[in-house]
Length: 241
Image (cartoon, rainbow, N blue to C red; front, side, top):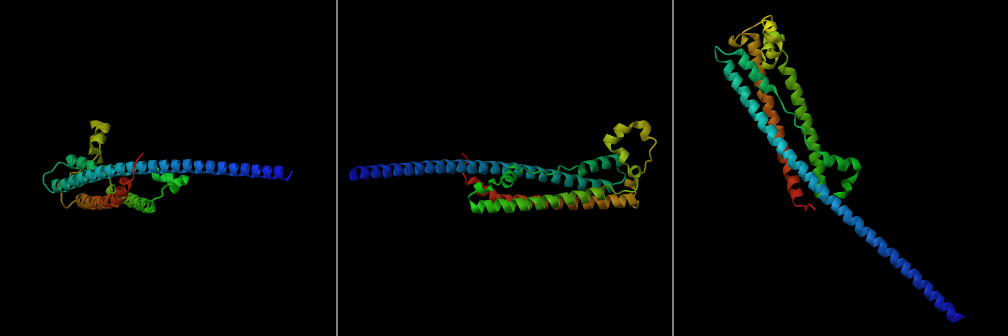
């Protein structure tokens, strides 16, 4: 009986050991699978974030090009304005082109997804994670500055006592819509050929202000472009799978 009991105990202990080993192996396999999935997710996020940065690089360059062109037009208007006689309608339509702005809207979908879902834990590279958080803060501040700039421009540029005295009806798109019959009923003031006219002086002042604000916009975008360089370099060192 003692021999049988001893055999049963050894057998039971052996079974328990096998079960424990099986559980440990299963846990190890699950952990390996989880780690593998996390690594794949991390690599995918790196690739997607890099793609967002590359899109933003292109958008910044396009915005800089557009602002540079508007500065060029604004400077041309100042020169044309000071030539007499000049063509008011041509000056006003150039002014309309100088005012048109494309709002810089960055691609930041992946980082927003990371933070809102809590998946930022997948980013195990602490240096890169911190740099992405810093960049996102810098990006938000830059967007706020650009928005304030645009709002100030809009307030300043449309602040004339009379739209018709200014000659808004001579903008091409509005002139075509109103037609000759209505156009003949509206006042016509050749203030662009009178350097002492208050509208002339205000308009010229606004043009200088316009150039100054565009230069400021370019500075904000250049700073953003510089801020992007390190995150892009760090992301390019990661392998996309």
